[in-house]
Figure 1 (cartoon, helix red, strand yellow):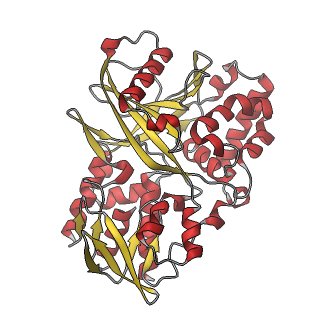
Figure 2 (spheres, rainbow, N blue to C red):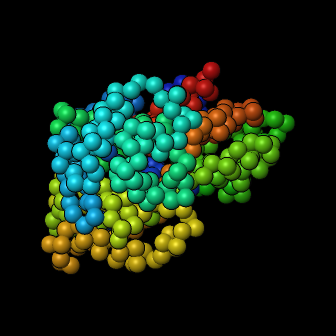
Figure 3 (tube, rainbow, N blue to C red):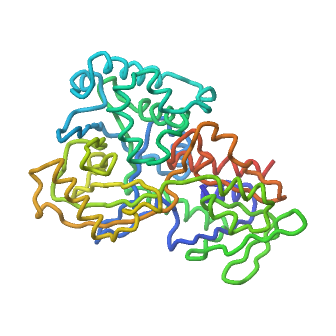
Length: 416
């Protein structure tokens, strides 16, 4: 989001400097070296409604690297693997009654055709889903996934946020029976390198491993930032850091604004990545609902983007104070390895070629009913100060496309 905003401002003639705390650009879309394989730290995929992403690829001359692949979904339910994600698979699913399956299918169909989300903003997601599919199907098909991702927040989520997830993926289909998702050749690193090159070519500065210590305010307007104990003067400051950081970065904000930023809660993620000799299943996304497994699903990335080795992401979503978030990487990896063997008992130790675990404290904003009204305006009351993070994608979910969209919107606010 910060890079997309910087690129737009540079094209408008502004002088721009980016200060990045990490040693690389990209945030959650950044790559790492997985023992010789450059791969995203956290999984990404592209859907057909991701128009801002496509526009940026075209601008950077990368549209030819966008590829589409037929993909499959599955459901590991009570120790058995089932097909998922199409009408025939739904009719065969044994976990709920035929009537409940038909109601579930109707909900997915009509949700994917809905155009407006505003009337769902103040509706609780569980109540909305139960109204459509009934309490028995909700308890089987939705409640376990909510609880494993949102924990104590699982009964207080906005229906608008859930609806946009259903619609985005539901709109990315080749046919009623076949899902089709996209990827970028070379991964998101292809996009990030091109953006970085274009930003520097337009005269933009990018300072890596340079966290902002403070945003300086004076007499109701922004005066710049402090980095490496040095004040640097700027007329405009745009923060795309997670909102919980903002009160510490900008301690001179008024108390009401500080409280509103502090009230935005987030779920953390500990994500285990495996390099395997063969697939676990044929699916890109596998939902998991099993009492002995503490994950909502796995993502077999190379069932979307082909590589020599098979890459599988096993994400643990949890509050940052959760016991498992404090586990060592080795302990998380060992448990996740056991989960993959449970899903596919034919996997042997020899199939596990490598593993890596990463963590991100502010992985997913919690969006309760009425979330839109909780967000302070991006253009703050302080002249020249703009603040946003992934919370402002609401009701959309996190994606590179939404990052581009909101980054461009912030740039337009500055120009206005």
